[in-house]
Length: 454
Image 1: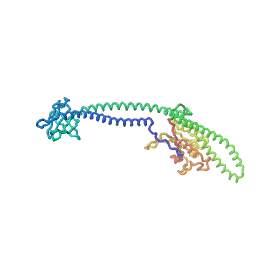
Image 2: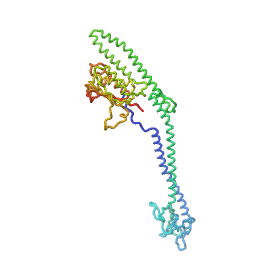
Image 3: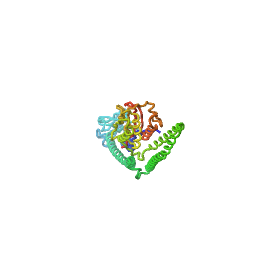
Image 4: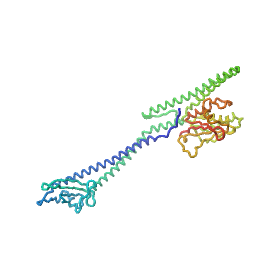
């Protein structure tokens, strides 16, 4: 099964909750800032019109016809503002081209229409009500207009709207602060769980301890059960691998000795089968060994140190070859691989180079390619390169070399399992093994391994 690296994380729960709350509050606030002033304006206008209709009723009741059949209007209404020039309260009567106006209009008229609005003295914006009625002595209708300056109403509405905006702003800020505290408090158990997981990863704890809310508690129990099962399975696998290795060593040695005593014909017939048996045993023991460490979450190893240790051992084994290994890895470089597993990975690759190199083996870290965009996977991994100046192999052979039991040269000792085990062990750590032509002329092995998490 191919395990792909984790994709980029989504925004945090806190930011998602705060963003959802902010969007909801801003939507409600925008709606309230439009709807409430509209209701207030409608209410104020209706109240003002009701008062204007009262004045209209008063004026209509007082309009009369004199003895010459001319329409006459009252000189005074109950509100003295109709007598004060440009007071903001006006009336006018018109019948058959004749117009009568309140003293407050003075030398001006009410102008405009319903579509474009009405204006009065000094370009005042007017709120107007109209009525048409008939007098018994007249056949023509009488048009009555009562108007009031609506600028004070609009000013009042503006003050109310500003006050509303201030209240809504304070309310939104207060609610967001409250939600921030609520979200932070609600997410504290997850933060505590993250800290406990970090302790497990760093090897400071073997399980997740503490009390958690009802929604998280089952997850914690399942994680603890998984950790316990994982550690038990790994320990059991390693113990079984060791026991099996010791149990099979003596019988296989006896078989080798007995086969060696047989006549050449029978020996040639049985030795391939015995070699195949040894190969299968070595392969499956290798797989059992690479089951991982009991504390794999906290694994942290310095490749430079392990390369030096492996190099010292290989120099003794292959002393007659007079090879030079140049370790260019930074001593501070760390990979999230258990020490024994890293020895298995680097040891097989370096030993392969010791078998085939002519004079030089170079171990170094692969730097990013200039001009290429660094991905998150590149930032979280380390690529270790092992170059040698041996004969090398072609592209097809590079692919075949990582298959189980494949040996490209039968004249050298080995089972053909080393590179296969390295490939599978690297994959276990979500890494990658690659083989290609080396700039030194031989084989280049690249191992991509994860960095320890901070």
